[in-house]
Length: 385
Image 1 (cartoon, rainbow, N blue to C red):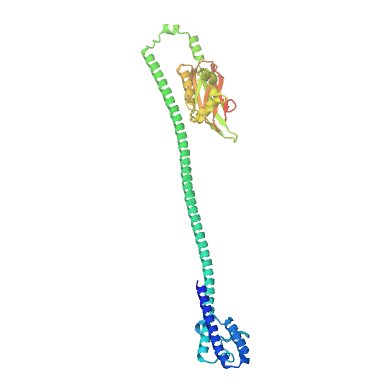
Image 2: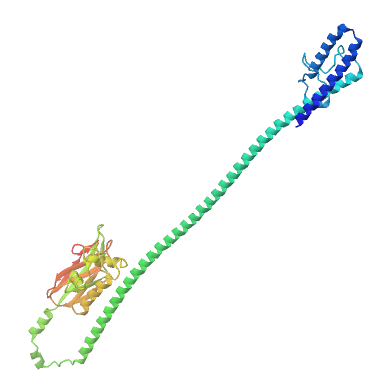
């Protein structure tokens, strides 16, 4: 809109200048001879052509400040009005100068508009760059927020893993404690059974002692001596037998280990026959090959075979309580001795925690009327590991 207004104003100015020049030429032609009219018209056309030409060398700042242009190329209008074609009146010169000033102002305004347009383009570019930068900053903020959430999630997972690790460690410790407690329970059960057996033996001995006290001892008279046959006495003493045994295991490195303070049973039945009669089935333990192995493993890890050791010992103690065997415990050297046995075939049954798992003996021995001595080793063990 501004350019259109300036163009209209410029056209009106040019039109007024041409009318002014035309009127001036008419007045001059009236006073000049007829032969000079063509030359005057040519001069006026030349002036109009120069006035309409654009000065290109003067800068905008010179036009604004009013500094004259001194570097006008040849053939262009230099800002002066030729005196040979225009009348030298002051009013005419002043009008032409004002027209030239308006033309220079229009050029300066056009340059300003071009400069403003250029700066506007640069501003638009800067706005686009700022917009892109803002979008990038927003994208980075979103990525940063996502990374923070991810980091927080990973930290939560790490804390959960730490808690799970601590829980697993406590669980393992609890299992170990339970294993130790079960082992202590097994040992306590053994001790309790041992004490119970001792109590039974003590009661039995007390009863026998009471019975012996109640019976009066016969007087040693000649009739009594004659009545007792010496052969009978020698026969009764010779019918009793004794057993001495030691349990010593020699390992692969040559070291010997004694089965000290270990419980053994001298029974008339072997271990396999006895446990089969008690309805203890090996089919319930598919990885066990024999009752001897089951005895050793149940003694080593009673929590893995619940109630098994208790059942085995109950079966063995039942035989002792029914006077079909004797229970004995080895000393610190792994030795034990049994007396007052009838000559017969017996089985030495016992299990010791020697080696990786243990050793079980189910050794048959033939007892005669004399003293008998047996050594329990790995060679005559029924199972060992």
